[in-house]
Length: 319
Image (cartoon, rainbow, N blue to C red; front, side, top):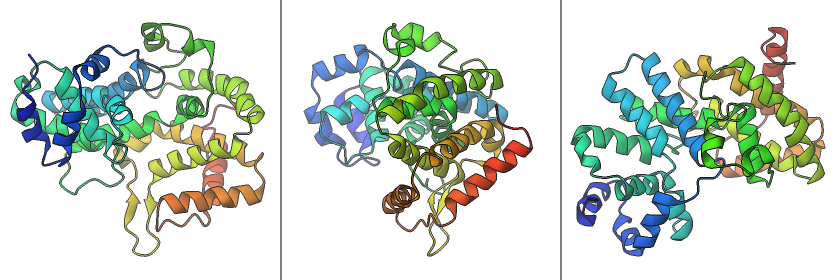
């Protein structure tokens, strides 16, 4: 039995005042689609399992309780469950994190059986996972899920995700079942989240397949924009006027575990910069500043290039 609509609405309304209106738009067919839809790359089995594994692993590294580890595990697994609702219900202005939380309540048998405290922790982790700046009192589990979702967008596998949004397709993940995609370690690093061997193999895939594609399709500038955004989400973006965070950086304790993923993104930025006229680079940086009001991109590219050079000197890259 699914929880009654009024009980879910009462629980979610403090976080999402418009939830009752969204509820009225959801049909039984929508719920069926949430349960049975074909899971695509990248927002299917691959991505949600990746974030789930990262989150639970980091929670263990922090020495959190079993209940908190479970919150991170479930939070990572369900964090994007509501994308279908956001896409179908013309509610793009609503946070898709809260839409994901709603989807979990709709499709999970009696989530409240976990206990009210656990449900509240899980609810916060799911609904806040896409926030640039979290409330001061946000739980550590919420920060872990959000930051592991960011980390999953980085590295060579993250570059493939960005390329997917730009139209890139490849037989290795488009002509097989979702189960095969989920278990294929050539695309999903489920074994060791920081595995050097895995990333080295995917680097070859990106340079041999993704880079030629975006060259051919004239999408170098768009890819550079995406990679710069991911780099900013890792390092953080500050307001030039008051030095406050516009985008909080990934937790310091997490950075060390995933630094090579960040360096892979920066390495790819370096490759793209070589193929992008300086005028276009300036336009891309202005676009970033337009999206993140108050952020100054002055000197940003130089900082990334300096980071890349230092990584090369310390032999932290794969080339």
